[in-house]
Image (tube, rainbow, N blue to C red; front, side, top):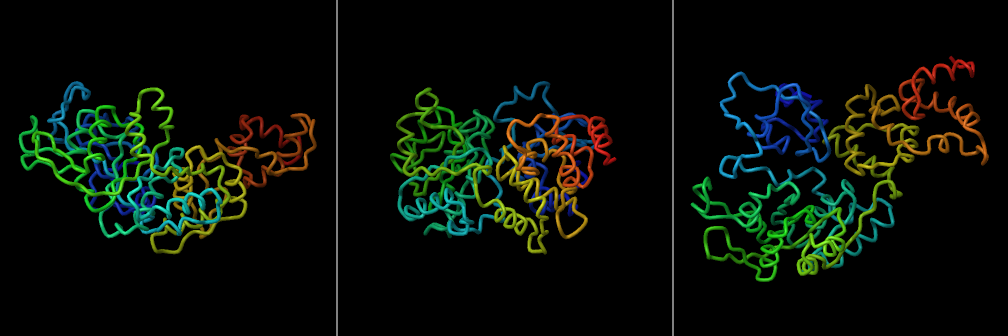
Length: 408
């Protein structure tokens, strides 16, 4: 996708998940302008940015870029780089409260009940779960359910903060604190969360020296910006999230034990998508969100059956991506199997069992494909490429087997 040409097209808005008009390429990709300038044309650029799932783009540089690119981008100092976009852009899902996330899964229900019991206390909340399992959505709903809902939720991705900028961005700085500092200084993200909620996403990736400063802020309820001895009182609700085991981090000396017991007030565990029982309801909800007030796409029952047999290694983020792309590809008001992106099939599990659960134990591989291929061929609407991807064989093999069965 060429962002330079497609930032105002409806299809691009649908793929990214929000209206792109008025946003800069830095806002969209979450990558500083200098780094984008250093990226060569015609070389694929992977990014997450505001989409919250991995996308790939091709860059087209202006004829006169007006930016001098250093010979090695790695050597750029904090004074040379522009302020990175560490906070995530709010998504439409953020208007949900905790109760709205209960779609029928027992594990999610338990997490909601536990979090609701401390929503208006000062007990920190720690959300654990695989990447893409909905930790930020849960944090937003937790904030919206609290008495602090009218104040800001400041979300900071700890894994995205460059080590040379992390302290100044989190704790703030005064004018002249370091070479290249903004003349007006910066209040820092912690002070911006005053009166509201501070969400530290992927706190397990926070550098140790920053952990020590954060611990002091939590203990003293005040923050001292870089370049001054003056402290500012702060009052915020702390919510953290991680896909790591912080206990293992403590054992491995990559996470401070004293900070662990500060952030680990109540821990809730979000299940992976493959272990959730409410996938059908999730699909409907996501399609409504992605329709942005329009008529959401319906989804064919065969597609839902395939989705229920998927491993979903990318969890909710992958599901949202698959639905977004399928909606863009669908020419009708209903998403069919042919509308699914090809890479959806790479992680599909148990297709033989789904299509033919009555195959007895001890059957041979020859019997397996002879019994499953006809149903799979019809389920894939006679798409040879998709059938070959699912069965892990070449297209020629599928043609030969279909011919042998008298189907093609």
